[in-house]
Image (cartoon, rainbow, N blue to C red; front, side):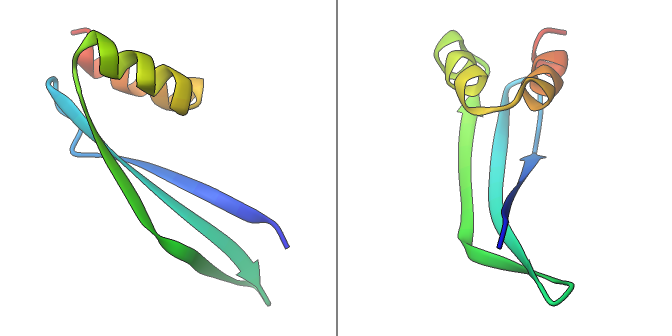
Length: 70
């Protein structure tokens, strides 16, 4: 059984972003969530940018930076 994580960048503005993480498994062709939602908010500051760079894949990090560095 493989657990997949879905990440959603929610409420992405020039000042902040909310990152929603959800874990899912597929059982008999049906995707089911495992555990609860995990949501963290980050501000457009050097400290939070560093945290995001460590915690997000390059694809998601670049999406946030595309908005924040405008």
